[in-house]
Length: 100
Length: 313
Figure (cartoon, chains in turn red, cyan):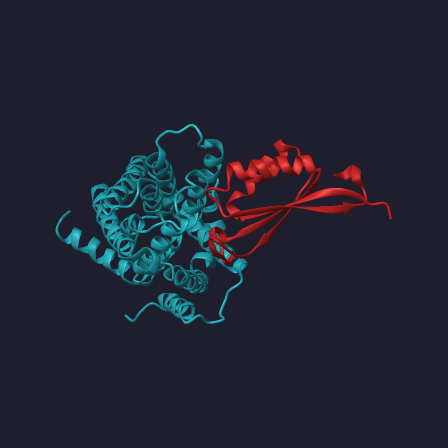
């Protein structure tokens, strides 16, 4: 199998941020992303997704290390202080490098 | 006249939530029910509006807009008096300047059950009252600051779910007219109450979850969440008398002014004033004010309307 290394950036945050984050990803050059609903609990209490204001989203981007770091730094500067948000990077292997 | 069963559904939901029952309604159901309720209210208003629209309506709409500016300012003053910091006071005030469509649905059912007439254009006032409070809240929180994304906010405010549904329903009703809308009538006649009952069951469950966080914020927030609706109702009722609305219309405007938003404003405030603590506002508006209005407020505001008219206001 011919695998290539890329970086997976995962962001879990308040659902209210969805529009803003998607706009950010476009400007920062993410090649694509996957969004899903999430629920859980953390330092800002339980977020049960019982309804609109209480929901989380999980955003996943597979891209180059450089773009992933750029996005992560932007998120930290812009949202960490006031919003429920975690983001982490992981190395993954993909089969079609030109897609990411 | 016993207690209205829809209110009992709400109490049941509160109880089930407070005893930590396994009962949960799927989130999509809540969405569906609120969409049906808002469309039904809009449609009904639109049909009647086509029958009795008048030039006086424009002036009245402007007065209601002014009410939407005044209420959050009153709430802000009260909150600052209770020693809340500026940002949180402004965010909570925005919730109280806006309205709760759920509370409006209950007052519609309450008056209909008693066969009390109310002006048909009330749903229009709900939509109008949604808007100014959010803007006033933002201005109170940070003045005219450059980092507010007004475009994004404008979309959030004017194209929000509840305003869209209400205005859409109003327009469809007004364009179609009474005859054509007949097949859809069950939406706001026989179907309205069953939908409202399930909606209130879910609201009870949600409100019980908010009550849990009340312990953290204590007596000051609870006091505000009980005093503010009374002030709002009084201001709303006086304005309705000034506009010459009927008993039903007066009770409704009082209820609208007493109610606090828990959907449109939280979403907008989260983006515009992120440094405000969102659970402070939700605990007050959902945990205390909404149940208070449903259980005690609405009958009280109807009595207030009747009393004001009896006194010749």
